[in-house]
Length: 281
Ligand SMILES: Nc1ncnc2c1ncn2[C@@H]1O[C@H](COP(=O)(O)OP(=O)(O)OP(=O)(O)O)[C@@H](O)[C@H]1O
Ligand SMILES: [Mg+2]
Image (cartoon, rainbow, N blue to C red; front, side, top):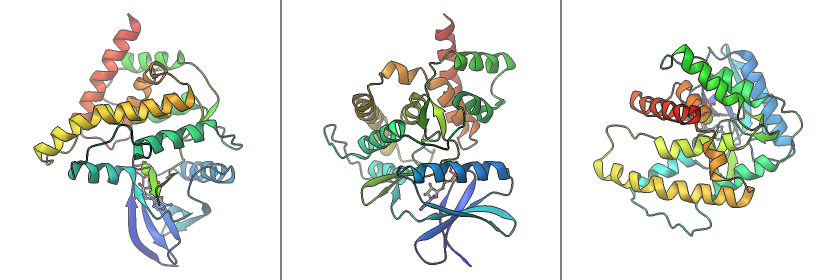
């Protein structure tokens, strides 16, 4: 079997076409622990077998010493790419548009959260603490406060995707599909929703971005937040307040992903400190 062209990249992998045009291989970086790859394979298999909108996992492989998973290829675009296309074409978002990507994102998350899935057993809070780790930006006391805060969050046992960044939502002929199920867990779905909200509210565009695009993005944030939260809350019955209670862990795990710029990390760190301070008062 030969690797085809590279069609995607993430913080832990590259994704290549694999033997023909209907499969891909997700090749993990050599520093990814094999148990993490195994966990992704197990979680994605559980999601697929339960009929959730995911890529079909076929098998695990080793390619030139690297662990990989063969998946069915999703022909489509990531939500991330579509956001940038929208920003650079200065396309206004129609708030009432029932079919906007943001409403689809909210709907697919709600479908996942309402899904009955056997085989996903990761406990959310424990897993979040493990992936947050001990980022250098925080003192030991702050890490303890973050943990204590998380221990007081309302516990639920619903299926959560666990990594709802806009590179993990693909739109195939307009239909949403979620990839990257490594961090799926049983827990409170507000965590998934908060991760998207934190991205919308705190994303920092690269310094090369033209100033008119940055200006448009600032206007986009508010509209996008309202559409997304409106749709999710309407479908799920969860309140905006319940979602915002998960900003601290959502931001902390983004910081720990290692994929953010220094400026964005600084914004998130200061938001976490403000929220912790408010929570303690
Ligand atoms: N089954 C698939 N079909 C088509 N493209 C895919 C598929 N799986 C992944 N991709 C593409 O590859 C990219 C990286 O894959 P994935 O999100 O699984 O990697 P990751 O390293 O775990 O990501 P992250 O940075 O979120 O941790 C995706 O954003 C998507 O563009
Ligand atoms: Mg990803």
